[in-house]
Each structure stands twice: as structure tokens, then as C-alpha cells.
Length: 457
Ligand code: BES
Ligand code: MN
Ligand code: MN
Image 1 (cartoon, rainbow, N blue to C red):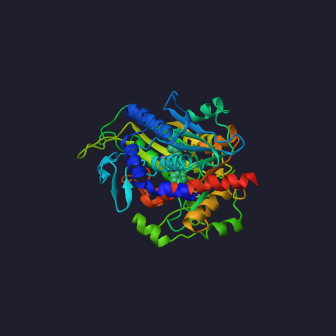
Image 2 (cartoon, protein in one colour; image 1 turned 45 degrees about the vertical axis):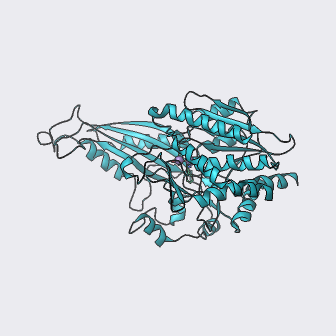
Image 3 (cartoon, rainbow, N blue to C red; image 1 turned 120 degrees about the vertical axis):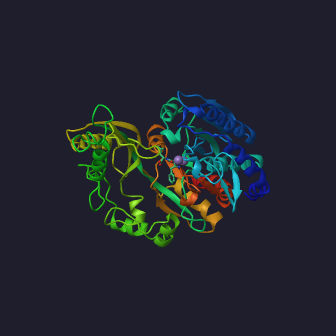
């Protein structure tokens, strides 16, 4: 691997220059306005895979955004690694909160700033460059297949059908994903769990039209007031979710495992400082690490209605809206939770309003084993490059397709990400440390090496 590492180290500037070009294309999957740019990004990925030496590179159109595929089969008998990632990004709004424009990448204090820098373009690009290094130096120890999609941030709507249709082409021994984070640059970790998701939008309707808040106020239900009360009632004084049956299927994590979990380095003071908050918040009886990994949550992601323009307009609005997400843990079922939410939300609505609940995308939680060769290879690779044993840690985020990979393709995923929680993914001023970008490029070839070795034993 030394030859590969020398090659990779000698090409650092070009790797970063190419990432900058990748980040310049605004591949916002949620906004139809960017449809052409999303397609351009798919083509960019395909071209870079070809340049790196991949075969059968193709941009597969879907009813939504395209999926990019490419592969290199070096030896039919060697194990096959499927690299999954996404080239789409979250919307950049609110733009005014960015220090520099989101699609004009800049490097400051050894970090690259742009939407998608960490999530997930920067991390996808590490794989393409690591592959280029291994192949060009004649040291690619595993077969590799790339599947890079453009709809992860909108729920991977068309990916499971694609996986079913091209099951043979995608056949693999393990799925390797870099779309998560490590504890810090001195404390590597491997993600062993992701939360599931149930996402709903609610609409509360009061009177048939906006009313004068003086003429009618006090006598007709104000849907914003009502919605606020309803939302407030969804959590009790211990910050437990009040939806009947919500916790019924929640996995009880054993005391010993919780103890182990809480040994991971974590500073509450630093956490609060980083977020400029005076105090933390959450479900009674659980630590911050537990609240963000093994416990389910309910959060309002957006709430609107009525007058929000300049000055004061006296109005009793006809409608109020909110987008609500629930993060799920094993063994909660997203559809079941959505139904429980809907039933409860309708039940707690006063007669003075009507309520509509619209489900959005959802996803199952995942936990991955730590006693598999797939995990061990990742632990060995990180140990080699960070010079420290990585800590297994469950994450609070979701990658809904991971559970489906197991169902459809029958293979387990390894979540070897290189981001940091402070990278501001989904927020203004997203960035990715150059240390992390290069560390990923350096580590990935070792994954291939150790995985091949462990598999041949
Ligand atoms: N890469 C993230 C998920 C993530 C981030 C996992 C950090 C662990 C640590 C992914 O792109 C993402 O944002 N997922 C969405 C879900 C999706 C359905 C929109 C999420 O978690 O909100
Ligand atoms: Mn991501
Ligand atoms: Mn994301």
C-alpha cells in the first residue's frame, strides 16, 4: 500500500481542486429549479469515475434524479465492495446566513466551505480518489462497484426500485458508506447505528378565511394558537413523547451497553459552548449521547401561517402548518409510528378546527454488528491511519436506504464516515476539514486491503 499512499499524497492539490469543481455545481435535489444542475452533477461524477478507471460507467435516469454507477472487477474470486454515497445536497437557505456563497467553495483555516462539502460530496470524492490511487498503482485488492445517487436528501425515492431491478449488477459482499461522522480528529469512531424517520406535515384549519382579529378574535379558534398547544402537548414534563403506543416497540438497551456507550469521550461544556446554549434539554433519565442515539425524538422542523411580513397586520388566520419529524430507534416501524401520530393528532384537535396530516418519506433504523469482518476491516483501517482504535458509536442521523440495502441486496453496510458534528451539515456555512478529506482518502485503501485479507482467511 505504500506505493498507493505515496501516489495519493503526491496528488493532494489536484484532489482538492477537483472537489472544488464538484462543489460548485448546485445539486439541490429538493428544489426543481436545480434539476439541470443535479443532472450536470451526475455527469460530473460519471466522468470522474471514468477518469479514475472505472468500467461500465453509466448515468441511470429515474423518474426523479439519476443514479451513477461504475465498477472495476479485478478478480472474480476477490470480494466485492459496493461504495454508496450521494451527490445531491440540502438546500442552502437561508442564504443570508452564509459567510461566503454556498456554491463558491473557499478554503479558510484548513477547511473547505460549501454546501455538500461534508454531506456528502466531499466524502464521496474521497472514495473516487482512493480508487484512482489503488487502480493506477496496480493495487486494487477488491472488486469495487460505485452507486452514487442524487436523491438521498429527499428520501432516496427511486433507489430501492433501482436496487431491485439491478440486483445482479449490484451484487456485493459489503456496502461501504462514508456519510457519517467521527467523534473528533483525535478520536476515530465507526457508526454502528442510524435512527429511522417518520416525517409528517400537518395542516390545521379554523375559519374558512382570514378574519379581522379584533372583530372575531376571542370567539373563533385561532389555528396557530391551537396548533401551538397541540404541539406543546406532544411532550410531557419529562420530555417524553405523549403519543399512545409511541414507545411500545422501542428496544431497551442493556445497562452494560449504555455504560459502554457513555464511556465515549464527550464534554458537555464543550458541547454547550459550541452551540452557544446555557443548558441542554431532553428526555429525563438519559444522557446527551443516549438522547441522540438510542432514544426516539419528535421535533418541529418548521411552522408557519398567518402574517409574517413587515409591521403589524391584525389577522386571525384561517390556517396553520407545521412539519414534524420523529427519529426512530430499533424496533420502531416508520409507517406504524406515522399512523399512531395521525390518530393521536386528530384526537387531540378541538372541534373548532379540522386537521389534515400528510406523511412524507420515512425510513427504518439500523444497527450494524461490530463482530463481523466487515466492521473489523474498518476498525483496522482507521487504527492504521489515526493510530488509535476507533470507537463504535450509534449516530442520531438517518440514511433510510441502509435498512433497505439489507432487505433488497442482502448485504450489510459499514458506516465509515469522516465528518465532524461541527461541520454544519444542512446548516449555513457547511464545511469539511482538509484533514478529514485527506484522512479519508488515506484510510479507504486500507479498508480494501484488510477486507481482502480477512475475507481470504
Ligand atoms: N449524511 C446524513 C445523515 C447523517 C449525518 C448520519 C450525520 C449520521 C451523521 C444524510 O445525508 C441525511 O441528512 N439524512 C437525512 C434523512 C433524509 C431522509 C433526508 C437526515 O438524517 O435528516
Ligand atoms: Mn448524507
Ligand atoms: Mn444530509
